[in-house]
Length: 181
Length: 189
Image 1: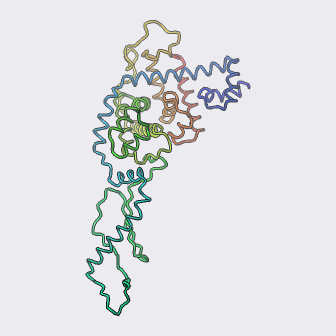
Image 2 (image 1 turned 90 degrees about the horizontal axis):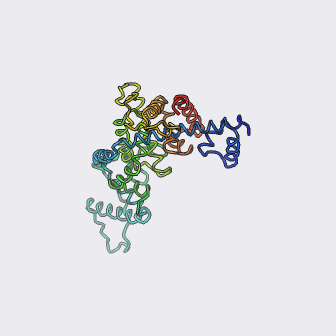
Image 3 (image 1 turned 60 degrees about the horizontal axis):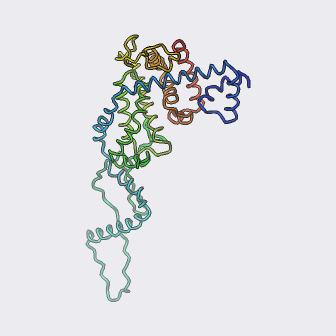
């Protein structure tokens, strides 16, 4: 390797960013070449100076102030119950086993509420077969109000199956790691 | 037993302030070092450090764990630092700690005898002030790259994740920043 080959690789060598083979080649060259070794020393001096200066200045900061100041501010940040619920369900992996019973319970509740509110009682005559007649059920939900801390709430009606879906989303997309720009 | 970052993040998400406190105490020095390099004085650096952790708490449910927590924290402090500097350029204020010969902020730590390697004694006022001044003259992006590499020791990959740019960009910014610092500090290093 010549100085020309090595000069562009010196910073990468210094930072340990080269492959092993290249690392060996640059190390070998710079051990024999005063100019390239001098270049490496120069990079090292700058690094030492920057690191030591910043370290000395951090020592002068009163970092004991950081947490109390942060605590005062985050004390006012409320974790929405929806977020706590989601975290809890993720942690306990309840999505699978809670789904079916919850759905059944909701359906049963809806049926009871409907039958009570409609006041219709199906009478079975003596001539009728002893099989309960299945009547078409109007299970349209009426939403009076929604109380949510989420930013986005949508109500979706699907007329074909007469289904109402409440969609609550408090996730704003901030990219892959979720930090706002 | 010490809890891992991920365990503390999970607890913080559920509103556990003590868990978040552990994260703050674990990383405040690292964050403060970057903050100090990004802004001109200690008060601003402390404020930037606090803002970084507040922002982290506000957005902790968005942290997906695809990178390490500290990389994510660095991204926050670097972004806030760059924003701060852009604001400063629009509304320049007089730095409270403008380095002056004979009265810098690094204290009275002049070596009692001349050193053969002055860069090993950066607590000396002159070198410390000159280094601080040279860092301040870099652009925000170059400053961030040099701090993440030289002070925090991040790899090029980690820096590219923090800065959200390519590895090639990291290499070229680092090269430029180092050359600039070498030029500025040639007579004291």
